[in-house]
Image 1 (cartoon, each protein chain N blue to C red):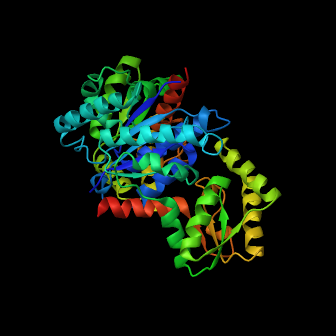
Image 2 (cartoon, rainbow over the protein chains, first blue to last red; image 1 turned 90 degrees about the vertical axis):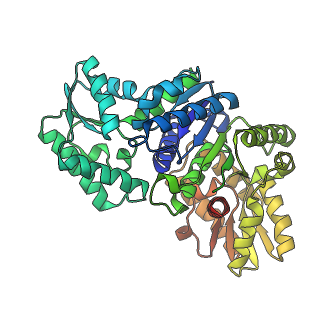
Image 3 (tube, rainbow over the protein chains, first blue to last red; image 1 turned 180 degrees about the vertical axis):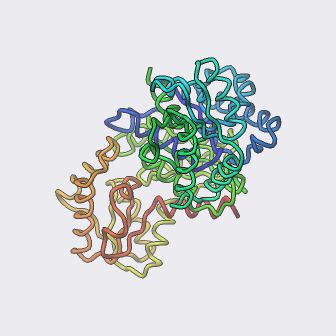
Amino acid sequence: MKVLGVLGGMGPAATVAFLAQVQALTPAQGDADHIRVLMDMNPQVPDRNTRPGEAEVELAAMALRLKAAGAEILAMPCNTAHAQKPGILAAGLPFIDMIAETTAVAASTGARRVGILATPGGEALYVAVFAAAGIEPVVLEGPDREAFMTRIYGVKAGEVGGAARDRMKALAAGLVARGAQGIVAGCTEVPLLLAQADVTVPLTDSAEVLARVCVKRCLA
Amino acid sequence: MKVLGVLGGMGPAATVAFLAQVQALTPAQGDADHIRVLMDMNPQVPDRNTRPGEAEVELAAMALRLKAAGAEILAMPCNTAHAQKPGILAAGLPFIDMIAETTAVAASTGARRVGILATPGGEALYVAVFAAAGIEPVVLEGPDREAFMTRIYGVKAGEVGGAARDRMKALAAGLVARGAQGIVAGCTEVPLLLAQADVTVPLTDSAEVLARVCVKRCLA
């Protein structure tokens, strides 16, 4: 059993939901069957959208500290911050890439046109990996992009009620109306507002995918 | 803002629920308003009920590593493991005592006879602190004690469904029938099976109390 190191806090609610998935997805008859998780939930990492360089310096330092504390595999339940992956890899530990793993699962549904619910930075990462996987991306456009970011920052401020959920559902429906045969919840705040039952096409939840891979890799 | 160090994993589901409380109880408009949490979720800490000495050695080492990683205040969402508090204090950091904090909240409800839902080890800690606070304890007796532990180990194996909840509700009702004017959920697995709505007297949730104090102390 390997020790999982989690670079978290981007944002805190999404990190807690991810940890709950890791816990729930682990086959366990008692405490000792669960994996050990070292976490740095650091909500003060500089904004990944507006200060990417400073964010990378901080994430690199977090990765090194997790390694020093005993982490053997690293994961980060924030899609946008995967742009800072090189800084994390510098710690020299295996890093589970949420963008690549989520894309692989989305591709396995058979969808060839897939909608992306992500921040601009996260979207750019998905578009690049989709291209390599032969998937055509359907991205948020115009006012929907701004409306999406309003909902993400809303989750970080505790807005996870019905109105916020309705708006996220409408944004997903808009991507489906434009031809998406699947949707990627490519920001870990999205599943706090959107479930499979809210969408008419397969929904691939990046946080759940990451949790599954973490459990599999740490128990291997 | 101070960095919170969490000695977790006893058990994992209870730790995740505690982190969710910390997150939800923090007044925040965005990520940066949340407190930083360094966590060692270690489900392999030796059993606190059956191997207390080995557990204390491990918890002491965890506390030192959290301090080295930058933690400034320590907390542990496991009541039973508070018997190993001396080992944790050896790290030289402030440690928020869940037993003392929970007892203070239970006393503030005005109840003079308070039922304790805890493991034998956790119960002994509460009985001692209750005595100092002038509270008369009402403890589990006979087969109820064994039934309680079955439910706690059940939570650790993922059993949080209706039948388990009904059984925990009955155990709480039994304490009320024997004169308890309040109930302390003195094991962090209990609130995963029992809510205030399930009990006719004030329920003091040790995990929620600890989360509130953590937020207050770290934001102070």
